[in-house]
Structure formats: C-alpha cells, structure tokens
Amino acid sequence: MKRIGFIVLFLMTAFALKAQDDVSFKVICKKQVSVGEQFQVSYELNSDGKNFESPNFNNFEIVGGPFSSSSSSVQIINGSVTKTNTHTYSFYLKAIKEGNFTIPAATITVNKQKVKSTTAEILVTKNSSTSGSSNSGAVSNAKDVFLEATTNKKSAYLGEQLILTYKIYYTVPILSPSISKAPSYSGFWTKDISDNNGVLQQSSIIRNNQEYHVATVQEIVLIPQKSGTLTIDPLNISCIAQIKQERQQQRGYDPFENFFGDIMGSSYTNVKKELISQPIDIEVKPLPAKDKPASFKGAVGQFTYTSKIDKTEMKSNDAFTITYTVSGKGNIDLLELPRPNFPPDFEVYDPKITTNTKNNSFGLSGSKKAEYVVIPRVSGDFTLNPTEFSYFDPTKNKYVVLESDKYELKVARSANEGSSGIIYAGGQEAIKIVGNDINHIMSDGKLQKRGALLFASPLYFIIIIVLIAVFAIALVINKRINKFNQNKVLVRNRKATKIAKKRLNNAYNYLKIKDQGHFYEEFSQALWGYISDKLNISRSQLSMDTVKEMMESKNVPEDITNEFIDSLNSCEFARFAPGDPDKKMEDLYEKGLEVITKAEKNLN
Image (tube, rainbow, N blue to C red):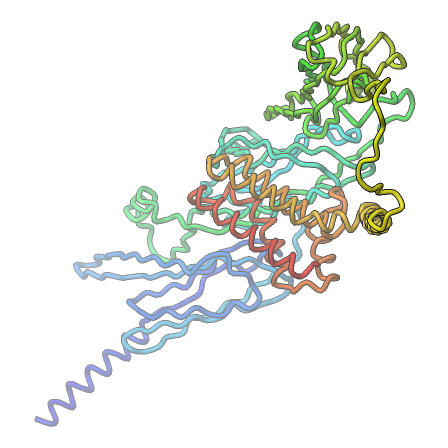
C-alpha cells in the first residue's frame, strides 16, 4: 500500500514539473524608442496564474498600468483538442533619458510556484523632433492628442486687447480634460471669456491631411500693462486618452477575439496624457507720444461718448441727474471716466459707476457710465460745459477726442432758498449774505451787567489750556496720519486684507446664486490683489515664481506658500475639472479664506 502511494506521489510531482516546464512567461516590447516616447510593455503568460507582482521600472516613467486581459484559443489537430489560456499584463511607459536599459522581470504564482518572466534590452535614443505636446510614441504619439495656444495678433499697443485661445486637437477619444498648471500671464491684465459652462464645444477640421476633432478649452482676453516683449507661458492640461491596445500575438489569428474585442471595447485602455502648449511672445508697442491729448487716461479701442440730463429747468434745492456714458470695444473695465466741473454753489454727490461688459470670441465690449446726483443751492442761470473723453484707436493708429453735450440750466428761486442765507445775483462774486443772524442794535433801553464775566476768569484760562492741549494732540495725530498716508507701501499693506475679504464676500454672493464666471473672477482678484498689496508688487509683475520668492524672503513657511500657490492654480482649472460645480466653488471659497488667514499671520 505504501508503495502504491509513493508511485502516485511520484507521478503527480512529475506531471507538476512537466507543467512547470511548459509555462511560458515572457516580456514583449520594442527594441528601440526615443526620449519622450510612450511605448507598451506586455508580460504574457500561457497558463493560469495569480498574485502578479509588477517590476520596478527605475529608468522609465509609468504612464499607465498594469492592465490585464485574458484570451483563450482551441486547436483541433487529428481529433486531439488542445485549449490554451493566455493572460497578458500591460504597462505604458515613457522614456525619460538616453541609454541602454533592461526591462526587468515580473513575477507571478503558477501552481503554487513563483515564476519569473524573461527580461528584455531596450535602447533609448535622443528625440530628434519636438512638439507643443509632451506626448509621443507608437502607442499614442504627439499627433494623436496635442494642445495649441493661439492669439489673434502677435503685436499690440499698450492697453490693446488680444484674444488668447487654447484648443485640444485629438484623433483618439479623450476624457476629463482639466488644467493642471495655469500660467501667471505676467505683464497682462486678464479676463476669462470662456462660455462653455464646463462642457467643451467640439468640431472637426482637416489638418496636414489628417482629420482632427477640436475642442476649445479656454479663451482669455489679455490687455498688456507694459511695453516690450512679453511672454505667455505654457498651459498644462491633463486628460485621459482612450488608446487601442496593441496585442503582440505569438499565436494564430483569432477573428472572433478581434471582432468581439472591438465591439465590446475590451481592446481599448485609458492612458493619462500631459499636454503642454507652446509659449508665445507678444511684442507690445508703447502708445505714441505725438498728438496725445491732455484728457487721455489710457483708453484703447473704439468708443463713443454721450451724456444725458433728466431736466434743465428746476428750482434751487431740487436735485437733477446727469449721466456720462462711454460705450464700445476695448478695455471697458479699466476705463477712467472724465469728471465734470460743476458750479461751486452746486452740491454734488459721489457718482454711481455702472459697468456692463459683453464677452465673446471678439473680445470685450460694453459700456461704463457715471451717474451724478446734483443739487443747486442757489437760483440763477448756469452753464454745464462739455467734458472731454479721449482714446487711442489702434486700427487707425491715432488718438480720438470726443465731447459730451453742453447744457444751459435755469434754476428758479425756491420758497426755502432764503433760509440758507445765500442769494445768487448773477455772478460768483455777487453773493450776498442775508437773514437774521445779526439783529439791529436796540435804540433804547438800559444795559445791565448780568452775571460774572468769563474773560480773565480761572475757568477762562482752564478752557484755553484744554484747547491748546487738544490742538497739540490733534496736530500730532494729523502728522502721523499724513506720514502713514504718504507711505504707500504701508497703506497697501494695511488695507490688503480688508480689500481681499471684500472681494471674497463678493465671490460668496456669486456662489449663492451659482454664478460661476463672476465667482472665479472675484476669487482670483481677491488672491492676486491681496498678495500684490501685501508684498508691494505691481499686478503686471506678478507671477507664481515671484510670489513664491517673495513669500520665502518673508520667511513664510513652505507649506503655507504652497497652499497659496495651489489656491491660485485651483481657481484657474476648477471650472474645467469634472465634478459638482457648486461643491467646487464652496471648497475653493473655504480654502481661500483659510489661506489668506494663514498668510496674514506670517506677513504682518
């Protein structure tokens, strides 16, 4: 009996060793690639296994994987049926440096025994071509998916708007495009005019004899704030490309596998792609000094200038409204409206400024108006002289001067005008003071001394001393306030947090009504404005690098600096990231409050 058991055990061991010898576990990959190229590495096992252990790809970047797939084939030869199961474990790698390297072995367990795959040698050569995208290779080369940045002009005047457009071109399906790193647009005032509500509009185009799908990712208005050569840094976008999986088949062609693989989508896999646009240089020309009008305040574009008054005849102490409006195409948000000159006897309230802008692929247009409420306190005839608005028209290369209307006002005397004690008699010098402030001296009666005199009394001198002390204290305080106001750096520093919180409050109001466009604009302005005022850096010189350098020079902890930079980046790509837009805005708002609070504690 023992002998039979030994024989059975011997036979089982022999069959196991034979099965082990028949196991094939090999690596399949290209023999040569170039730096930056993506390629596929597959480990193919012709048996059933488990506990696959990935190798360590020290000299390569893992783009995706491992992705597993299985297939089976049946062969009938002379009535003998043979069934083979094949398991494949695939990686997508990116070559990052030149040299001869070894694709290492992977490990898997077959019949309770660990089996190692073969290894392969691969040569990585220098990349002979470059592209605006960081992706290339046999699996998914640079022509499959790439990002392109374009501007409607390469040269512009100071203050002239340009349109910057980012587009993704792709021949394979892509998923979840999102901005991973946004440029700082140093030297430019910017406004995002994208109108996609998180949904990319797609179209098709023929380019280099190849049909591409095109999606506009972002459109931005750029207004240069300084002359010279300004560089638009690259934009980084990450996405998922659905790449058809390459199968290295070392066996007979199976039409059923390929047919059902294509139909069911099992032959496609997701690969992460990092797209980088090319930098763009813009030549910014200074505005000509010749023929520049005295009223010019920096407006560049094409505009009209109008005025409107609600009435020209009224009584003194009655209010009237006059409105001055600039409309057209250009830097509407940055316009400075002219201030009219009113007669000195008119009470003028601060104007109500209203800005309405329209965004489209042609840039910014709209109107900006100043509405004044004015109260004439005296009667008479008055003239409101025209105000002058001037701008530079880049299409004509010249300055244009516009004037508002001239208004003649007739102000009748009101019943209560005399109570003010002022009568207007035609000219500014002919103002008479009347009323009952000074009464006639009584012609009769006796003068009597009533009570003690204050002059030269002890109380008199105490009052004089107190007044002198109060005057001295007020003088010291006034000097300190003037000194503080003269120190613009200190003023900006002190007001930075207040202004930032005001903008964050505006962003919160837009959050409540789910207005994504205005929310992101206010949030971005809050962070950039805060750091500009706090570090005394002009907006045109702000960039991620300068912010980081200045915060480090102020000994701000590295984690707080990184949080601040991350918040700036998050604001740019949050609207394109997948997910609930309301949740994204809420998270971003809370993060903004937190990071400004942390920065304030370290920058004071």
